[in-house]
Length: 181
Image (cartoon, rainbow, N blue to C red; front, side):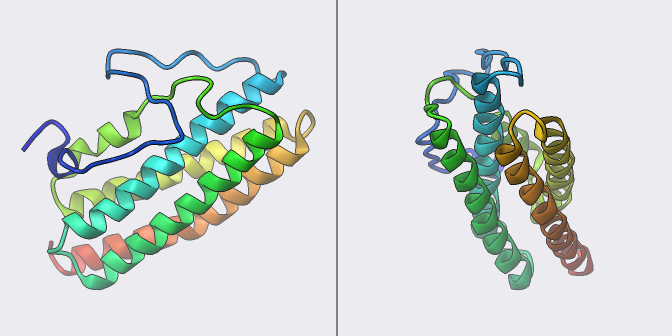
């Protein structure tokens, strides 16, 4: 098993994002939230996190066949939800006249799934990642309310929906634990 565990052999296509070439290359620092470009950096960063989460949920549903089929169905549904959020963010980025591939992003979230060697590992890990995403979305929404209320509203809506995602992820984890997988 490679560095990324069962996720390693999966073909992932991160288009339209431009991903940093190697794990050693750092994505550029985000610019000030007081600028359109800085807001774009956050939109790009979070959109790519949503993209990685969507890919991970889809992959887990296929890779971890030992888990209850209901869990795999939840993961497939969550993959679509994450993809929807990504699209909202990319649409806003375009509305601001900024290109998604203007600056590289890093696939650190995807690489973090290396710790997930089983469906149980993934279920526990992704529930925590969803919670971290919700908290970040709430913070971005608060900070942007006065400078960019449209983007703030998008982050707020995503954070609200993440509450439901967390519930679904926790339900999946509960089913995995019950199944002793």
